[in-house]
Length: 377
Image (cartoon, rainbow, N blue to C red; front, side, top):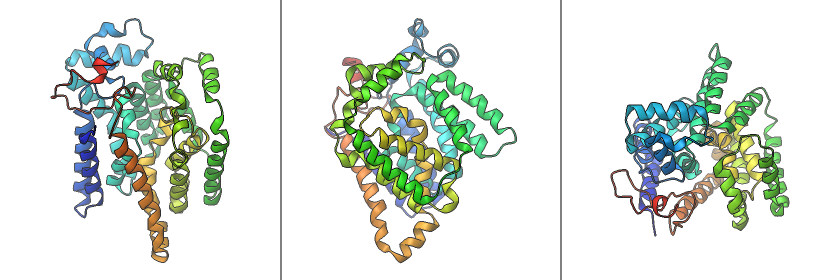
């Protein structure tokens, strides 16, 4: 089985990224088709999206749930009072969650079309399909980040305000909101130290490859901090946290060579940027917990900055090195090839019982009554 919608979409994005047309128009069209692709999907595409849609259509659905108050008692009733129509719910959530990314890409990326492409080939889009409340929380936190980077006079007031809103959508947002602020005031070590640290954490992750991470996460759950979710508990019970153990070592170490490329070629003036430091955290976490498949969800608030930081690798330093050593172009070509083939393979011979429920993709105007979200979950 092949999910052609995903494949056609990525081909269009590649064309817009590497064609020679007007850059402004290419970014506009890449943004529009991304909004169309994510926002016009049927409510059954993406794990809990269908359940969240049911909660939007029937407010009693959340009556006895422990879902955060801001989402359950304010956000959902507000949307329901406007109109109760499934496509409206999906599109508004898409608009809310993608808007801060659009602003950050537009203002801070040096290759905006590439940033949008990275959003998909780096698998960030999956969380925007399957983790609504967490993504809403991250989106509001990113607005706080925007006001800080913009150096607004009351930037930390805005940051605190949006952090509270983020917490109101997903309790786990308290962790990245605190770490974001701490990292802002830290200085990035030298380029060589950063690259060596990435290599060392990758080695450390290999050593811990047989480490029973389930014990670690069980201890975390037993703390009863109220920061975990039903989805994490489901992954725990179904042993999905260890899925990564069956993956090849090259796949597991993909963030080692991605991180080394980014921080070796990045311009000096970018190294100490807040986004660069946050992305480095995501690389280190991925390396240490390389056999934990669920780390993608837990690390998402840091990995999201890859869409801005990765294009920074192709700045003045890269161009100057390329002039002297043409062969360095092989490195980014291999990165694009690897992540693209992983994206393509994930949409070929897919498993209809996969908990992510990403397949088959369908638009809201298509008949989706036989979709696995309805028939199998």
